[in-house]
Every structure is written in structure tokens, then in C-alpha cells.
Length: 479
Image (spheres, rainbow, N blue to C red):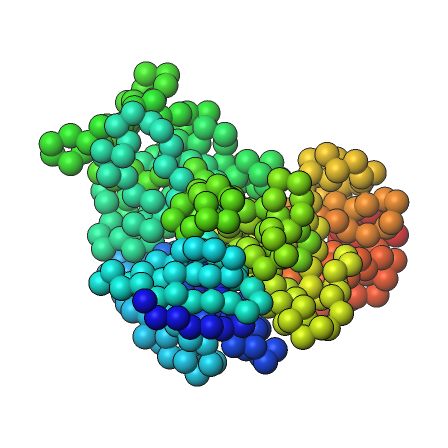
């Protein structure tokens, strides 16, 4: 067993871990990063990149068919093989050589294998051959191991070998029939993708479609899925699952209804990848989500940092926000605060400070790449009411904006802003419609910057663009 010492050790080389390590190196400290799978993590190979590649080709074809002139130029159907080849390229053919080369160029030392904390500031890495290497951190260890798909305890489900988001994102062939258990973001996006790629899709949405979004968003996606031929069974729950000898999956619902499919995708949530990283060695529970303070140090049940504050957790494992971009945002704060504490720099840990992730609570942007797209940031109406804010909700028909009519024939969409009346600022914004993803950052800036509505009147949207919805919302608000 070798022994190697670094200023910081990061367990997990996904986007979050990579960004932490990069910030640490830029701050002048040495860093080692540990990865048991592919460098680049879930987002690069089994989530963000390959899934959006699957969805983009179908969205582009749909957009072309919505505009006269380009509609007539479309003479064929979707080329599924070409879509899958493009998906493969965005997943780098599931090869991480490029990511490894970047680590090397950035001065980050990679250790491949399973990383386990064995004591304070000590991580043992066991590679595929069983060889163990002990790493010691002078200042901090950061857990950035992400999350995995949650598999519910449904009789027969495990034996039926269901797909998780990984198998769906990396599918080599398109099943004739696909059943989806769940109604959240992954379930909705994959139902959209596979229906367009030729599958007959059934969605079992026990809690509805996109239940955490504004209600009109889930309603519009449900309607669109059904228009695309997807069977959306709201309030339906799988009671038992069995895969027959011919490969057919038989799903018996709790109401007695039978659904048959060639594959079943389970997309009901996530579970932290903390089962085998040595948490028990430092008094924490293996397999649990990690609780952190404002600067993302792991804390114990009494809210105090573990030990002298040497252990941090960023990304999915701390359960603050399970989104790649938000995890990378946390990574920048974590890397910088570790450097600050190691070098004696003052820690900026007030709201919106450099060393905290304030946006996790107030301004999380998210795009759901369904048809139509759902783009949102900040609080929904229900969340703002639950927070005790005195709010006013302003809605506008996105299809009534001049830029929308130019963008596509029969453009259908909706926009909502949630206003904190006491402060005169926007705290929530949701857009539903074709290609609304690129409109989202303006709303994010307005919320993070707490821009008063009186000042927003002076942010004049260009005409004729879909962004003119900002003017219409302000007019409806009445200032």
C-alpha cells in the first residue's frame, strides 16, 4: 500500500468533482481525484449529453414541420440510426480519454478505483486488481459521488431487469413497446424521445406528470404526449412486474389493469452513491444523503461540522438540488472556500457570498426538454405561498406574442411570473412552449439580481422576438 499526500482529495470525477478539483488547482493547492467509473460522470455518458442528443433531432424535425417552406422540404421521417450515432458521439462513445487528458492538462492527479474514507482526511483507493493506495489530505476531502436511479420495492421488478435512465440513454435499439414508471423529468423526457423514435410508450404517472412544476406545465406536456400517441395513465401505480420467457414485461397495476411492454424504464427518483465510500469510518451512515452547512461542509445531527470541518459534500449527494449545473455551481463555491480556509483568506459566507450556494434555495433554473419545453427558475406559485410570501401571479399567453407567431405556425405556450409584492421583485418564472429554453437566463438574472419591476420596464425586448413576453407580463402587472 503506497502513501500519497495532497492538499485536497475529491471522491468522484463527474462534472462536480472535476470543477472542484479545477478550482482548487487554480487556487494554488494540489489535488487528487478518485473515480471508479468513467471520468466525466453520469452527465457526460448517461444523462444530460446523450439524452439531450436523443431529443434534439426530433425537436429539430418538429420545428421544421411547423414553418411553411421548411415543412415542404421535409420529405422523409426521422433517421433513427443517425440519431443514435449522434447520441454516441456526444457520449464520446463511452470512452473517457478526452476527459482524462483534460485532468492531466489541468494538473489534477487521477486515481482509478473505489475510494473509501478510512479515517479523518485519509482515503483508500482500491483498483480493479485489488491493489490499495492510501491518500492523505492536508486540508479537505470532498465527496462528489453523485446519485443513482432509485428502484422501488415492487414485487418482481428487479428480476424483470428494468431499465434505469442509464439504459435508456445508452439504448442500442428502440423497443417496440416501452413502459415508463414515473412522471417526473426523466420519465417525461424519455417518453418524448422514445415515442418520436418509434416506440409505443405507456407512462404510469402515479403522482401526475411533472408534479413539482406549475400545474399548467404538466397539463400541457400530458396533452402533448397523448397527441404523440403516448398512453399516459395518471394516478396509476405498478403493483407487480414479471418478465415472461419471451421477453415481454407484464406490469399489473394496483387497480388490476395489465400493461405489457418489451422494456420497462423506472424513473421515480434518485438515491445517493454513498453506500461504499467509508462513511461508517467517520461516524456517518452509509447509503445516506449528506447534510451540509452553508459552505457545504458535512455536518452531524447537531448541525456542527464533522470533526474540524475537513469533510465536504457537493452535487447530488447533499440533496440540495439534483441538477448538473447546480452541482457545478456548488463546486465553484466548495473549491474556493477550501482554498480560502487553507490560505487564511476571509470566508465570504453571507447570502450571495462567494463561498456559499445561495441560488440553491432561491433561483434554481431548470429546463425539461419535452414537447413543449418547460423552462423555470425560482419558486412556483405553490412554493411561494408555502414560504409565506405575499405574492401576485401574472400569466400571459406566449402564443399571442408577435415573435412567437413568426417562430412557428400555431405556436402554443404560456408564461408566468410570480412577484413578491412586498419587495417588488420576481421570485419565480415559468415558460412553456417550443424552444423556450434559451429565454430562461433572462429570468434567472432578474431573480438573482433582485431587479425591481420598475427597473425592468427599462429592459426593452427586441421586436419581433418571443422575449417580448417580458413587456406583456409587465403590462399585465400594471406598472
